Amino acid sequence: MKVLETDDIILPLFSEDLKTYVIPILGNKKKLKLPIKLAYGWRFFEDVLILQKNKNKIYKKILNFKEFLELSKGCQNSKKTSEEIYHNLICKRLSNINLDFSKCNLMSVLNLTPDSFFNPSRFENLENLRKKIEKLKTQDVDILDIGAESSRPGAKKITSQEEIRRLRLLFDNFDINQLNLKLSLDSRNFKTVSSFIDNGVLIINDISGFRDKKFLDLLLNKNISIIIMHMQSNPEKMQENPSYEFPAIDIYEFFRAKIKFLLDSGVKKSQIIIDPGFGFGKNKIHNLNLLNYFPIFHSLGFPICVGLSRKSLIDNIYKDKYKSDISPNQRLSGSLSLQNIAFLNGAQIIRTHDIFEVQQSFACLEEVYI
Image 1: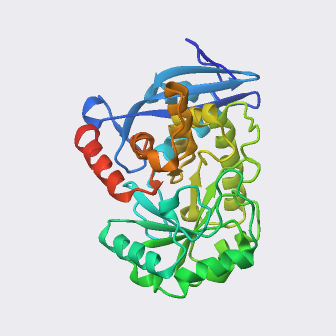
Image 2: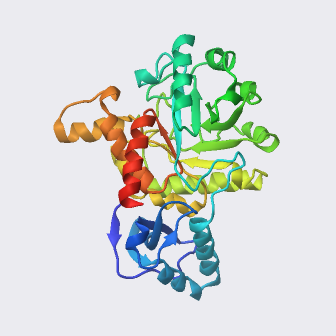
């Protein structure tokens, strides 16, 4: 679906036939005339990109945010919706597990799998796992994401019994409470998650996007958070011809419906984190669309987690330009570039294989752009 430049905003801004989306244009506070702080964080904006979806066309126009609010005053419904979006853009991101979302949190990846796409993230024996845990203690890591089922494209689903067996390498040999970080369990299986939920797990990282409603019982009865990721299909088939009308808008609407369901079911706002799912049922064009329009998700008012580390998108981009493949081991530079984009676009969690390198990169960006 093409995006067309327009000089005219369609009014009223919000109706059954017209969908309007607000994307903050983020920048350096010192270079903006009337900066508005995004989500109590480190990025600011004063202008917004307005996308209006009318039937099979999308129109775009850049407006000063105050001008956008003025346009909404002619209709009570538009006024109310615009004020909600304004609140979502500026409000503090809440966390029931005391994560500080006024900064970008770093999530380290630890895989207890024999087949994860990036070899150095695999830890299949206790000695190597101990070394990894000791290294984590010396790094300023906010979250550790532990997984035991590969979700790389083409990966086959394993049984919960096998997933639980692999995870015991960590849970049977380490005191999670001594790690001084938040533990995230990367699993889509209720049986697996419920087996370890009382062993220091504070976040369920669900790549299936909360398809299993049994997780609701855990959210309502435990002090935990959930990362809801968007994925088309499943890891085994997700890259078989994925299709979208307009990825950023399609996934925005997916989150809007999922969030409404959770809140209506009694889940607290402070428990919900969203992840657009780069590389999960998305080709290069889809992923680039998500990157280009990434700040659209701030209009939902929830913390955003991003996983771009070592992804095949980097290989796709490099191969198109230089006609050569690069393996996950060769994708550090591309990872840093894409993660820098996510950081400057205000992502509150960056899931990465390369903590030290990302810390360096973000520190430099802060000196220049923040």
